[in-house]
Structure formats: structure tokens, C-alpha cells
Length: 285
Image (cartoon, rainbow, N blue to C red; front, side, top):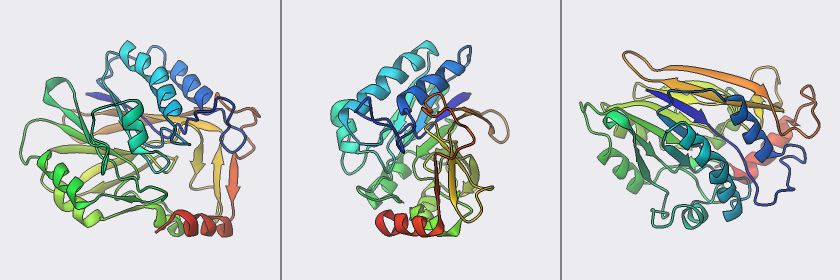
């Protein structure tokens, strides 16, 4: 089984809006998908959060205008996850009427061979961190049978048990990890997919691998920025393969097709520790 893992498109309803006054996010997504021409044998396309930057119905319609035909050409189901910049209720009203939108956007996407992608919504309105309430944890547990043959993949934002190297940003992580681990422990879940951090990262929860894909609108440099947080005009994508043994994941990071400055050496942003502290004050726990 092969899953194409996309994340963090940060689309706008306003076609003239630019992320950090620089990145045309729709062009970034279209450019990345164009570079994937010729890709085949994909069983699912999963987008793990921050589909929208402004949470507007127009941004979600644009997302599906771009991704629906792409997934259809691959003959692959499409799963969309809500992130901290998204508005679940608006997405449900604009794109997926009749699906559950409160308190969270929960969906199960059926794949071939009995496998499923289970979509979890950990977004907290107005916050940058994630939370799974008891109701959603119970719902998750009911869809995570023990010793079952079906292979399931969980998709969510922010990620569990894959923490940023910079401890100052832990306030933007997911809370309730112990409760989620208890739900997943001994289940048939094969891998947890997530976005939120804009750079590739791995971890595990309850012995289950966790993969965070690099962002499409920009890619954060988690190593070379020192005490700062720095993002580059790049776009990333991951390919997840599930079969016998451990999941296999490979990622590509490519020039950002939506960079209006066309200057890969100039960071999209560079936040000092003081600026990061202000972000945490505004959006962290």
C-alpha cells in the first residue's frame, strides 16, 4: 500500500493574498503536484492539516478544486485533516455537508483490501496546540480493534509523540498523549501521519510509527537555524509504503513554485527566540 502524504498548504480565499507577504500558496501546491506527474500506484492521498490559512469556505473549495482531480487521476481516495489554522465547521459546511463538524471533524476513508484512513481533528479554535477530547478518544478506540486484519492509518495535526527539537515550542504540541497512547496500544493501527511542523520528523506512540511530512507552503529548518526558527521557500511531500515489516517513508523537498521572490537563499521568515515566545504567548497552552 502506498500513501501520498501532503500537508500544510495554507490556502487563502483571496487569490491575491500571500503567505508572509511572499508565498502564493495555491501556486506552491499546483507546482508541487505538477512535479509529481507520472506518479502511479497510489492507494490514498492524505493531507494532514492547515489546508487553509484563513479558514474561509473559498479556500476549502480551492483546495478541492486542485486536489480532487489530482487524486481522481491517481484513482486514489482523498482524506483531508483539519489543522490549527483550519475551521472545521466551515470546512464541513463548504465542502462536506452532512459530515460531523462538532466537536470535531471525524471521518473514516475506506481503502482497498479493507484498510482505512481514520481522520482525527485535534484543532482547538484560536490556538496553535492540539487536543483530543474524551468523546473523540472514545470514537477512536471504537475504530481501533485489537488483533484485527485490517490495516489502518491515523491522520491528524498536530502530531503525537514527535516533538520539535526546540523545547521552547512544546507549547504548540498535542496534549493528552498518554490518553491517546492508551487508546492505540495493541491496536491494528500501522502508522500515524501528521503535519503542523513544516519539516520532516519521525517518532512513535504506543509503539506505532509517527511520520510528519514537510510543508508545502514552506519548509522549516529545524537544525541549521540555531536558536531562531527559520523557514525556507521550499515545498515537501512524503510517500508512505505499508507492507510486511515496518512502514517505509521517503520524502522530497523541492523549490517552492509559489515563491514570488524566487530567492531560495532568503528565508521566508526568521523568528528570534523573543518572537517565538510571543507566538507561544498568543497561541500556546
